[in-house]
Length: 120
Image (cartoon, rainbow, N blue to C red):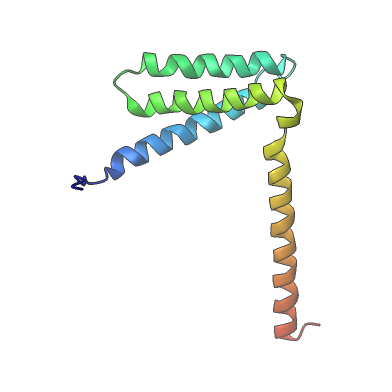
């Protein structure tokens, strides 16, 4: 089997990744911070709409197109979270568990460091 290998275009990969990440952050900011008293479903749909329009407006700017794609992803996840309550807050719970885990590891490290230095 003869498979042609091509070089990875790290510039394109970086551009795509940065755009998606920026769109994800921007979409999350819009959902959480803008129009706090607006229905969460409408905010999520608005983020999806803005994200869907961006690639069409920026046909020659792949970075901006990927920002739009990231916004669509976050808006879609937020919309599913509002429609399926069991899905809402899954990431928030993960973040809390992760933060607690880091705090426990830090306390263990601090205790070991104190024992080594003779502070106990």
